[in-house]
Amino acid sequence: MKNESELKTQRAWLEQMWTIRYFEEHVVESFRKGLFTGSTHPSIAQEATAVGAGAALRPTDPVFTTYRGHGHAIARGLTLNSLMAEILCKETGCCKGRGGSMHLCDVTKDFWGSNAIVAAHIPIAAGMALANKLRKNDRVTVVFFGDGASCEGVFYETLNMAVLWNLALVFVCENNGYAISVPTKKAISVENISQRAEGFGLPGITVDGNDPTAVFEATREAVARARTGKGPTLLECKTTRWERHSAISGGKYESPEEAKKWTRVDPIPRFEKELEGKGMARDEIEGCRARARKAADEALEFAKQSATPKPESVGQYVFA
Amino acid sequence: MTFSEAINAGIRGEMRRDPNIVLLGQDIGPYGGTFGVYKGLFEEFGEDRVRDGPLCEPATCGFGIGLALAGMPAIVEIEFDDFLTLVSDALVNQAAKMRSFLGGQVQVPLVVRTPVVNRLGLGAQHSQSLEAWFMHVPGLRVVMPSNPEDAKGLIIQSIRDPNPVLFLENVRLYSMKGDVPDGDEPIPFGKLRTMRSGTDVTIVSYSAMVGPCLKAAESAAKDGIDCEVLDLRTLAPLDREGICASVRKTGKLIIAHEAVRTAGPGAEIAQSVVEGAFDYLEAPIIRVTSKDLPIPVGILQEEVYPNAADVEKAIRKVME
Picture (cartoon, helix red, strand yellow):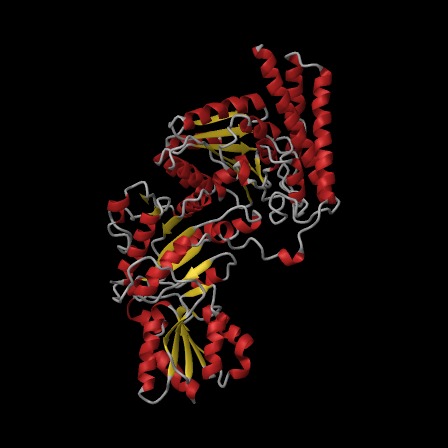
């Protein structure tokens, strides 16, 4: 029985991973076709982190993330339609077509938005955790960020304050190996970003970020720790990034061979194989793909058909 | 009551009214704030609401934003105006823009208070007036009171405003005494105050330059020149119509501020009058400002700042 329910849960994860994948493929293609301008930062091949961590949270646990946050938004349950419409800058988008790909948000789902300044959202997330502490509830705030953000000053400032104030906060670092083009070996003075935790007095854990189960279990433990008043945790999920930094990024990377290696690591087929090994039927797996594909297709269609914001509404939403 | 006590009384009253308000900063606990504005607040409201924190202004300001998003109005004290450079991301890219890029889903009731510590001989990194930087940012309010009564009404308005507010207090005003009404009446933003009515010259100023302007106006009055002195109270929003109405009456305009000249508030004010009352101008607009220089210590600092004699000279010139 336990196995059956576990398989059912994991099938939902698989479907969500495919949903993120197909959704983002549509996003990248839409950008290349000129359906929206600016840029977009896909998390293709990082789906396991978003899904595994997201699954360990209650719907009322606030989530903050970065511009590479489409997957986190989907894992939190924002509708694909509202997300795709936002990315295509349409009035029906979750931010009414004002924020775009780098600013996805739905406060009714306690998803407090993706932020386009590297690491700036980390102390903001901690401020939300402080609010919940002062209100004496047991919500746990989760903040996603990348390896690049782990080099910013506010990350360290926030680690220090989160420990000092014993906040119910989980730092989830998605280490995809590159900050735009600079590899972690050139930017980070230790082997694992989780080692940073030691100097601040909180637990630091590194897991395989391409394994949704490993991410889920580590997040669940960190969340349980935070929820029971034992303070923050730094969780590093080692993952990969297939796409370049963003859809408009040019320039050379240090090692083209290394770049090719990225595409050989794909968490989704790996997870499918694992599920097959546990007895999931092939047609169930195909069903996940088909449903995900359909949902992503429908979202794209919805976004394309949606109206753009009215020009005269340009000054709306500046002041409350 | 002094200017400092007026701000204290305004904050104290609001904290009694709204238990959600939290103060963040450094040296704000038993120490009472860098210049003593928070005297007694720690003792009355305790360490949960008057939170001394580590020296990390950027994260402290981020925490304030997180509290504000959660519906807990935050007041962050930054020890010197000059240190706003450290929190400019939190103010400029985060607090001022979040409501807009999230399509109106959030409010950011954040007040950042900081003293402008000029003429005290503290040198280039502790003596600046940086208000022009922040009035350039859509989404921010910039408040600069000149007297105790306004300080209280404007801090109350700043706390109640659901938007981010930068509240700048000239340190030389802290000991200024004046009548301050009891109660908790806010003063609305964007309404200048006529400090002296007159018919010959309009002098526009704010904060600690209002006093010297009044002094110069009294001196000129002895020679039969009747000056109108306007205190802007808030630079953003700027009471353009109030300024233009006065210039339509006097035909002459002097702008006096302690910020440096180039791209200072005076430039914006002058152009606003060109756009709104050009046909009424009888003489070129004169700016009385600090010189475009890093501020030295010792006797040299007085060479940089404007004073009452400079304003008076401008009055004589504009009357020629």
